[in-house]
Length: 108
Image 1 (cartoon, helix red, strand yellow):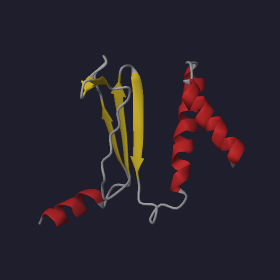
Image 2 (cartoon, one colour; image 1 turned 180 degrees about the vertical axis):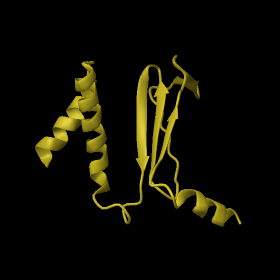
Image 3 (cartoon, rainbow, N blue to C red; image 1 turned 90 degrees about the vertical axis):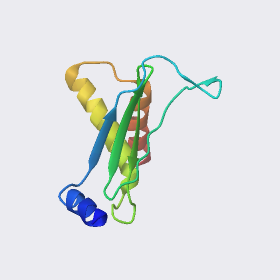
Image 4 (tube, rainbow, N blue to C red; image 1 turned 45 degrees about the vertical axis):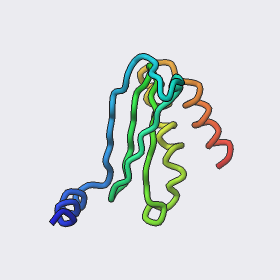
């Protein structure tokens, strides 16, 4: 029954997108300050997860490379979309995003 419910839920979708707000101030783990955070969630379909921490956004994509050809290019396309959005809104583009978008262009 649980497998059928999961199938029925995901068969009509192509992606799960999760946006989780994290703490705005530094946190400690094991007596050390965390400098970043990551969120991974395996799913039946591709999963994108964004998690904020200390005013920064961290993101991951979980995909099955056997069912999604050229999935390594997804990170570039996300970076490029963020650059395009920032340009359209006339806001600063974080250097890491700009560098990632530019690096992929130069290696394609």
